[in-house]
Amino acid sequence: MHLYYIWQEGFTPVGHAAAALMMFSMFAGAVPGFWAAWVFCGLDFMYLLALVPSLFMTARKSLFKAGDITVRNVYEGEVSTVRLQVYAVDKLNAVSLGCFRMDSSLKCVESELVQIVAHGSAELTCKIQTKKRGAFEIPKVALILPEINGALRYAANTGKAELLVIPRPLRVSAFPFLISGASGAVFAPLLMPSLTRGMNFVGVREYREGDALRDLHHKAFARYGKPFTKEFETERGAGAILVLDVTARNLREKSSVEMLIRLAAGIGLWLLERNALGRFFIGDDEISLVQADGGESFLEALARIPASSLLESRFSKGARASRAATNSRNATRTPKLWSPAARPLGPVLRVGLFATDDPLVHKQVVLESHSLAAGALKATVSDDVLAVNAKLLERSFEKSHETEVGL
Image 1 (cartoon, rainbow, N blue to C red):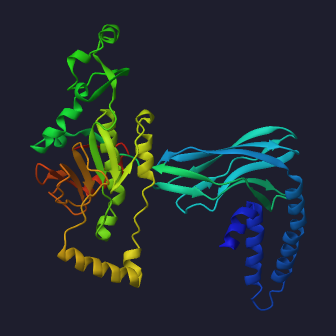
Image 2 (tube, helix red, strand yellow):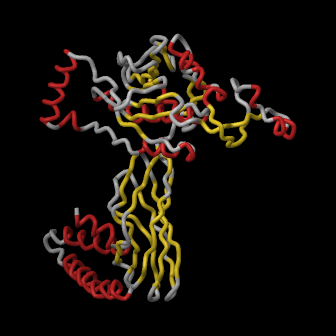
Image 3 (cartoon, rainbow, N blue to C red):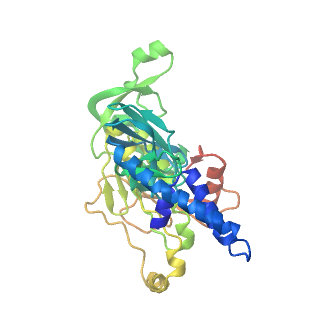
């Protein structure tokens, strides 16, 4: 692994070509009578060896001070940026910024080489292409200083950082299931702002169906010609309780965990837009929601959920024995129920991969990994359980990231 780090961090494209040609000439020298390949290999080796003193002097003479590292959190599939403010003590003839030793799903695009005069400063920016959701550590954010011949380079470590790749939420266009049936009666009042609002006025928004007429903002109505509603600060703790259960019982369910998180993100944002989300749980752990940040703390919590491993249940002997023991236990007992530290006071909406018979839960949205009704996006199992087809959601998501679902 250290050799890979040296290859990635210590060589420029010219150095990669020189080292690759040396290795190629060594293999070519194995051909009987092809002595010229060994001559070329020796010359190439002497060239790379002569670059080491030059690299040493480059590292010793390049004096700088690095500021704070800033990383922009992005949605999965987007490009993030890493920024670093650099102050040059001595003149830096050529310098760029790069990130190394990251997760294999991240790809860094180094910044262009720039020159910084003595006692001058510059802000360097590199880009990171993301593929999947997660909280990723960037172990080495480095200032790259190539030596004068351009074959080797010195990657000066300036610190480490964290990149949060937020799940791309499935947009919930309508949610009639939330207020349907007998259990929906406890959710319906939460969608009426007049019943859960506080005393502090915070702003004006466009009118939505279900808003109280007494909350209409008449001045905005007269100015823009369309209805607007006054918004009030929601009382702390008032609202629905969203519970995300990422427990997977088998390999098929593990493959649907990421889509489950995207669905939970869409449901949570739908509730936040209506000031109807009071508390949020991932399993039994409550996540603190800061109401002023517009759902950022909610999405960051989803990004920090550990990725589900698809390999542990297939290859290790210990995992196979553990799975067999788990299956035998599941055959004789019911799945673990939701057990928060404090009993919730509001209605509970659970989102998971399978339904449970939990007395604390009022409604459940279940992401089924197997096919439901042919060609149907969803199928209602009962008034309290809504089963959604994971395969159809995944196909829709692959076609367009702005997937809308009606629950």
